[in-house]
Image (cartoon, rainbow, N blue to C red):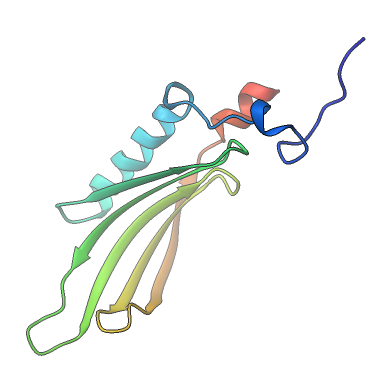
Length: 120
């Protein structure tokens, strides 16, 4: 008898899985490659993974605030598996309050979620 298909939220916690680097690594590499083309260097890469098998990769370059200015800028390339879109942002960050205001937003393409593809 087959088991009913449960969404990740309905699965017992011992059956939830964080996506493996083997599965998501090619997408992470592709996002980093796009960022290397679009952003100045050095870049910082952050990766988030969740038990519901979603993941996000963010690559950014920080333009620090000047000596007489409290605002710095971030150029960001980001991918979140639930949207399957590689997005770009240019944002202003207030270094005193840590508030962030997105000044420009763009799309660099789409990448199919490899975790979702494996479930099909």
